[in-house]
Image (cartoon, rainbow, N blue to C red):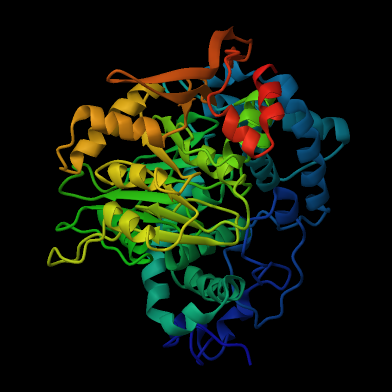
Length: 591
C-alpha cells in the first residue's frame, strides 16, 4: 500500500470536498465527456508543447476531473487537429528567425507581433491545405510567441537595463491567482507529517489529483500544462524555496539577488538581469529566508537581522531583514556550479594562459603560502578551489569559513565553520578561535575562506610555523593593496605590534599573491601573479611574475588582452628545485 499525504478518505482529504462537487465517491464526474483528458500525467516537470499536444487517453467515468474541456490545448479536433498543430508549429519555428529581427522586436508590442504570427499561421495553413480551429490557432500563436522570444529576442524591450526573456504575463497572473485560491484549501486537506516522508514525484502525483478536484470545485479553468505548473509552484512552496526554485535549477545563473518581494535580479554570463520572479508579500519572503537559515541552525529576525548561511549544495547565502533592509528582506545567493572549475577549465574560458596555468599548478604543488586577492564576485573562492586540487591526497587539510563553501576534493579534509552568538549574546565562535584550535589539530595545511579581521595574525603565524602551503582570500583591488589590508587586519587583533614587526611577519610568511578581477564584459581574469620577495628597510618588496595587459575588445564586446610573463627569476625557484619542479617553472616563465 502506497503511503498517502492526504489520509484515507480520498488520498489527501482530511475531510471530503463539497458534496455538490463530488457527492459519493466520484458520482459528479458522470457529466464529464468520455473523450476529454482527465488523468494528470507525471507532474515533476513541464513537457514541451509537442508533448502537451499528444492526445490524452480516454478517461473512465470515475476519473478525477481537470479543467473545462475547452481550455485544454491537448484536446484534438474530430479531423485530427493535433497533427495539424504539430505540423504548423514545426513550420512556424523555421520561419521565425527569417521573419523577425531582434531590433524590430524591441520596438514592437506583443499585439503587433501576435498579428504577424497569426498571418504566418494562416499562410502556412493555406499552403498545407489545413484548417486549424480557433483554439488551435490561439495555442499556435502563444507557442510561437514564446519560441520567438527564446530564440530571437525579447519583445518590447526599451534597452534600459537587461531583462529575462519575457513570458506569458497573462498566463502567469492566472497561475498566481489560482495558486492564491487553491493553496489554503490544499493546506486544509494535506497531512504534513505524511507529505514530508514522500518523495517529490509521488507527492506530486497525489497533490495533482487533489488540485484537479479543487479546481473544479472553485470553477477555475486551467489546461493540463497550467495544472502541471500550478502543482510545481505548490510543491516549491511546500518543499523548497518557493519562487527561487526555478532560478536555483537554472545552471546558467551564477548569482541571485532578491531586493524585497517585488524585485529579483540574477547574474548570467557576468551580466545582471531583472527577472519576473516575485513573492506574494514581505511575509512570504521572510518565510523563505527563515527556511534557508534554519536549515543550518541559524536564525534571522528583527533582533538578529543579518545572517550568513548556505544551501544544501554549498551555495553561499546572505540575508538582511527589516528593519535594516528598508524595502523588505534582501537575500543574496552565490550559486555553486555543478561542474567543478579547474585551472584547465579556466584555460578554456580565457581567464588564464597555458604558461600561467602551469605556474599556478607548480605554486600549489610546491606548498607555497598563497593569498588570493580580488573584489566582490571576482572569483576568489573559485580560484582557491582550483588551486586546492594541487594538494597531495596524503595531506591533512583544515578549512575555516564563516559559511562553508569551499569544495576540496581531497579525502582528508576537516571543515570548520564559525558560529554566531545566541539570543543571550553568548556562545559565539569566531575565526580567531577556530584558527587557534586548528593549530592543535595536526594540520598540514590551513585554508581560510576569507581573511577579514584579527585572524590574520594567527594565520600568518601558522604559515610561519610549519604549515607551508596554507591559503586564504582577501578583498583588495591590487596585490600591493592586499598587503596593506593584511597589515591593517593584524592591527585589528589589538596586539599593538610595531609596523616593521608586522611587515616582517607578512614578508616571511607569504610567498605569492594571485590577483583576480571581474571585468566589464563579465569575464573573470587573473590580472597579476605577484611574488613576495622580502624586506628593504621598512618596505615589503614584491615582483610581478605575470601581468594581464588590456589591448581592446572584439566585435562581440569581449575584452581582449595579453598575459605577459615578466621574465624575472622566481624567488621560490629553490623551493621548486626541492620538489623537482625547477625546470618546469623556468619553462612556464619563458612560456
